Amino acid sequence: MIRISGLCKAYLEGGRERRVLHDFCATVAAGERLALVGRSGCGKSTLLNLMSGMDRPDAGSIHVDGIDVASLGEREATLFRRRHIGFVFQFFNLVPTLTVLENLLLPLELNGFDRHRGHQDARELLDAVGLPDRENSFPDRLSGGEQQRVAIARALIHRPRLLLADEPTGTLDATTGDQVLALLDAVSRERQLTTILVTHSTEVAARMDRVLDLSHPEGV
Image (cartoon, rainbow, N blue to C red; front, side, top):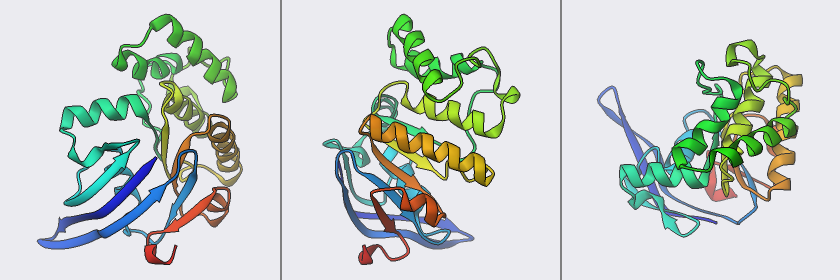
């Protein structure tokens, strides 16, 4: 599903170059669930951004389902991401002026999908994440855990093959985080999604099929 070769990425900070990834290589099998761990600044979130096409590497290739994302132009990368990748962020990133249902329908509208089918899929997903009665609520009326459940549903609405999650429980309390994680775990297994999850939690990482420590990638 994913093949990364010779990946390099550096940023300028205070006039100095900070190398985040250097000659990084990895493969992820279709349906595999991978946890990315490591110290802050080792490149976990950067790697997700590169795989999704939201950022570009300085060198190397990132093949996702046979497509070299690193070689795509900005518009091509946007279209690829909209159609094939689901992204769950730490801070939810819901549109505050849209209802829960409208937030779910937005990715489908951007992709030009059938609106009638979209309503049906959105309501099925809201039922799956335990929020069947909140479709007309606005995000600010939901708890943090409920907002993250909506964010998970939104990431799945267009039926992606790859799910990327960047510290999805990072802003939640332990109990709510466990509930959200259990939901994400169940959905990814049921849909056989290739899932890559960034986390600082050893407990969260233990739920995944494999753990990759970017502080010591050669040791995995």
